[in-house]
Image (cartoon, rainbow, N blue to C red; front, side, top):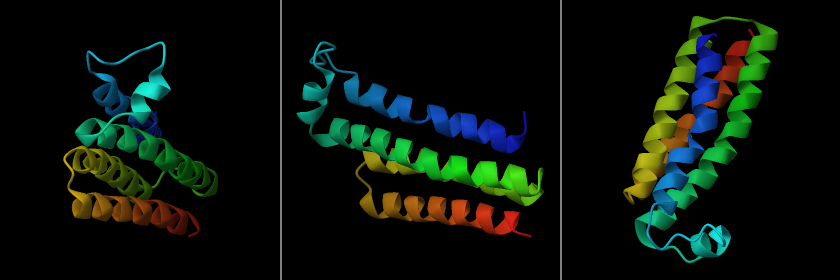
Length: 124
């Protein structure tokens, strides 16, 4: 497994810790999970938002990794960008749950920059 593939696996699994935080309450009702999630507030609501955002980020990262693999194969620049993406996406979720909106937005922006950079690096 290459570094980008490992990073893709990590990013694919990243939504789950956030939703586990959101659902980790005695009030959680598995018979009506969407109703429970819709009624959340505070850090649990932010954990659920981090969960949803992690799914959104997975799509663009997957596209970048597929394009990189088709265009050039292994590249130390793609490896570094993929690792950086994983790090900033973990930080994004932590900042989301901790209600650090400015840092969360910065992490989001850096993550998008990593994805765009993977595309750019793959064109050369």
